[in-house]
Length: 139
Image 1 (cartoon, rainbow, N blue to C red):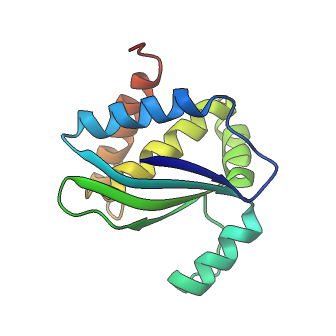
Image 2: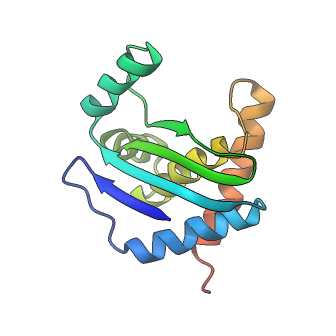
Image 3: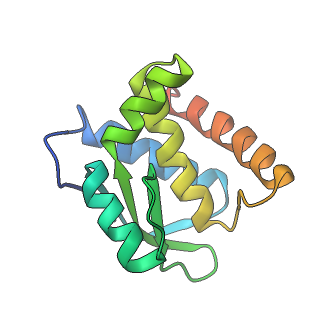
């Protein structure tokens, strides 16, 4: 099951379209969905979580809590809409593309991909690009 929660004024324009895409991303990695919750929030909301749970006093675009068991994917993915907007401006891309990148990024963490090394970051970026392309695939 995929659920979307909103702790800010932001709302996805078409939850079904995003849920279908997420299902395709999970399937493309050989997984099944147990329970995925995407929580869209503000910078301050995510900063408080970052301090409380990860002991980091910095803004971030995403925090992923992994409850997966093997390829049965589960987790809470918190996304700062403020940070996604700023990143889109900084990288000179559309907001939706940056949102998809961050949403895919959280899923990829649930499959064990990391971005702690330069090699890991490059692999993660390639996977993000691959998964973004699946958004535009009609089923």
